[in-house]
Image (cartoon, rainbow, N blue to C red; front, side, top):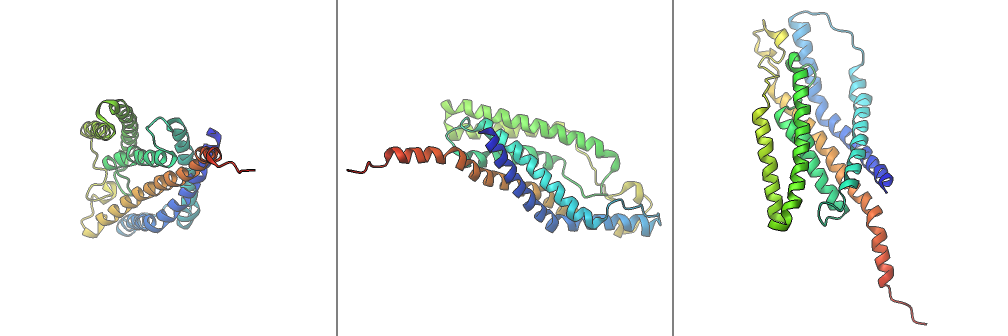
Length: 267
């Protein structure tokens, strides 16, 4: 059974990767191109630095490279989603396959993507303080781990509070506990100004031209596109996998019930 769910999860992830590629190519590549053009303008036009040798062409990065990355990510997330579903199905209330998958998708997107992103959002290539990359990455991973652990604890808390407070109140209390825990983490985790006004601090210190300031609207567009890619992946996996899992877990039971209640033909 787990093997069948795993295969279906990876298939759902494959479709999610395809849709994520389309979304990223349509909405994420334009801000990336602007960021690269901005870097080129500062380094080559303003400071007359020799261009670095391009190991992989930009056209290849935005097509085959982007497609490979989104497909691999989608398949991997689909497989992990299927394993988590197999471990939680029937243990989080009276939800059926589609309902369980939808709840897992919502909780997973919130804990894995949304919460870390709001504290440490993504930046387009070549934009931001290079010296903070390792620190930002470490803090992002740490916050992700804490967020996932807090979400698991909130789910366990909700199940324990149901007999006493009922399903709705227990859910509200567990959600409140998760929000408080994340709020404390937000306050304790340091903030990093990784995109100062000049956007390229090591290069633009001597630049006074206002055109050398990276457009904030482009940075916003890239971050919205980055979060949108994650939303496409998680939504597709949750909906598609829920439909596929339903065929495996519930239709045989429904068919058996139909056989039992079917009238016996008279002789």
